Image (tube, rainbow, N blue to C red; front, side, top):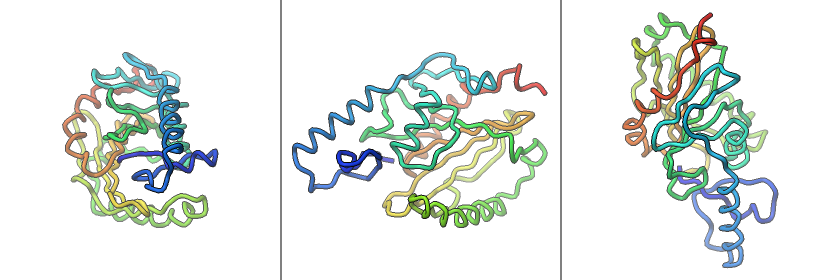
Length: 236
């Protein structure tokens, strides 16, 4: 998704996003806007190499060509900059030459953990993806009224962006959702990969516009190799 801050941040403390800056803004506003963008970009502190996640539950060895943003900064990006409801994110992975607010934004990978709704190996192998799609679409629709109350746009779960599958060898469950956010012309990709553990799962969610799917599929193996449960926490 091509994230650009609305010029409205000049007049309000809350930041939001739009597909483009409107033509009505003045040159002076553009200067202030660009300075603010630079200030935000300069505020990020990225990590490289081996990084511990969630008090040692898991770890990420940041791949070459990528950079990692910790949990606190990632929450700021997701909620304050991208205008989403707060989430318990463990961190985010970005291509090295991409910023969360770049014009040339391609995708970022949000990393979360859940010990609820755990899927064991046998269940994962036998998932009915048609039923799963219907259930997810119903859950998305039922959550839209609450999103509206909280001031967030509604979401239409269009369908699978690519066919879901379970990799029995690596114990990773893939599904890619195509979403339409109210008011957006371009649909959004959420490519979810669940790394199954014995007490829960790590979820890697690639976020971008739907047209970056081929790019992410080309990169996904390298990203998957970089994230794992630690043995100390993985063993029950």
